[in-house]
Image (tube, rainbow, N blue to C red):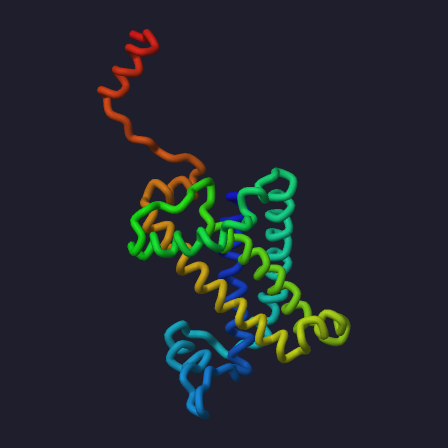
Length: 221
């Protein structure tokens, strides 16, 4: 699970970067209100800041290559959670949505009582399940855009070519937001938590007096 977690990071980063190269060839999406553009994806300074070049063919080549790694990595992750039984700790239950609200209030320091905690709290269950569904959605909409004629039935299920492209773009924005929140949450949980994510173990600091008490209890010299 840790390997698929870390492999997904550079693969998804490359997918987003190559997707930007593709999108810049036709960057039409905006959020408008009353005929006034509030947000444009993305303004000119954004491309200049990241030095994003006009290379549509290069972007498509990288995007279509690394999508197979993205799909394979996601498939192995889902397969592992099924056969290992880890899905029982990841899927939300009937109490998760109510408890997730309590988790949010606690994280915002509005509620002092710690919500029910297992390996994953309710908010994590919902977020980790949602990210898997988002991954499936990205693959489906991506294939619909990639082969709209050959996979016409998939393109139709995604609402047509243009709507599939909007969904694909929205899911990408969702990945970025998830990543930012995910990293912030890990940082707030402390260095030991981040170290355990990387290495697979936690370091527990124990006093010398505590060890002497344990030795006396077990009869060790």
